[in-house]
Length: 410
Image (cartoon, rainbow, N blue to C red; front, side, top):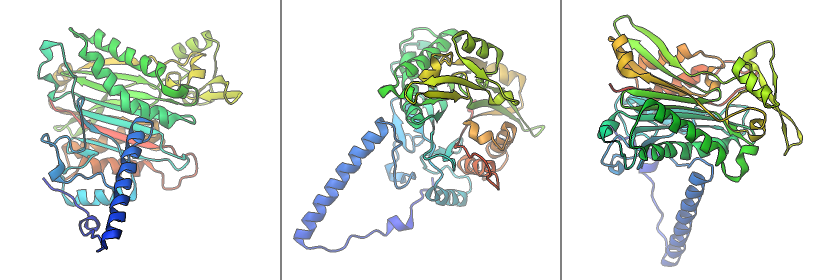
């Protein structure tokens, strides 16, 4: 395993100091460490992503399970998409030099990757995402599930909007996977319908329990992929996109087998519910840009929302925007039987990625990396996909972009 270390960190030296100055220096270091620890705790629990000077972890600090290259919890190994900064781009160049080796980085490995880029028109990146792989359920009561979690994983994208959208998406990133695991751990029997109900309840609980009235000043999409054994559950509210794709190596073809629905107000069943609850739907020439109109009692003005389902957005919730997800189930055994020559992967991403590229382009790029290009690392490809999704000439709105991809182990 290759370990990346930065030259500028390796040659750090402290100057010689007198005893008095040394004591002062020691006190300063202690104060700095304490301040940093407090800031990290607050950032992790109160709505900001924790920051670090480097996401690359020296091999000597890796846990026993080397798949957990960064964050390990009782719920599994956690990968968070980093902001695509210049430091990350330096890491990417070093990853390229490793020629596809599985190196210890916090945001991916040879079968998983995550990356995010703040949009030019945003004061801060409101996207959040998470990969939990393997996904562990503490105190699991279903005996038939013993040892089945080696291939289980969860991927989720949260695209915040509104003044506090980043806080809503951060809350979901911190809590939703834990709530799902804890809820599943209480079950003595499993079925597709029981798990779908658990996902439904989790989304609704997250919406009700948003702290500090965040639901009045922000909202978020939530698109979740949960693999449990040979079943895959797709739960979605909003207009983020998760899909299951296959690569057929005999025919050299990539195709999307399943994608979640975009929850848009112009859809007949969504429009009917909104209008029944007293809301209004504006449908322009291109219906995909339809909006729900509601009165914001904090701003004292009419505001619009471009989706019919979301977590948060409580004022729109009063007129028919709901947090109840649409949950679909895919049986992998059936998919494999129908596609005996195929290999499979999933992608979860925010809508900003598709302003200038389509989902087929994204699927093809990741398929080539996972299954064709020998020295391709998925993390490098995730950066490449984001870069190619940025238009050469940015003349209009530029949204945040986040993409996560996972190769399925069968």
